[in-house]
Image (tube, rainbow, N blue to C red; front, top):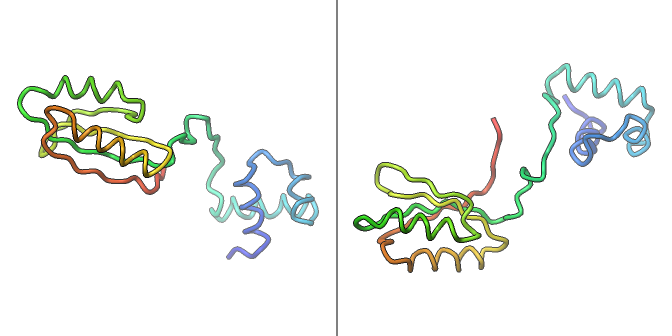
Length: 141
């Protein structure tokens, strides 16, 4: 069971995973030996399961993200794919099977920008129907 010091240590590591034992000890107002013992205990009991590095690509410059499923009439799929790929808000375009013809990954700074992007896509010649789902959170396996 974690106590308040364990929780504070985890928050400090989430804020700066490269913080030294001395920095952590200073910030938490405990000794380096206490920080080391707590880290060992948290790793041993599985509370801390690993450490990772976030790259610039991992931190999305687009806080509002969504998947837009598109139905395309006739043989216009390739043309619509080219138009979508040219839009800066569209991160990727996927062809798919089933009910939808294409799935567009969209990223924008605001909901208003997302709404504007969806409107422009819906007005493209050949787009007959669409459905959009916002991405609320992403977890890595």
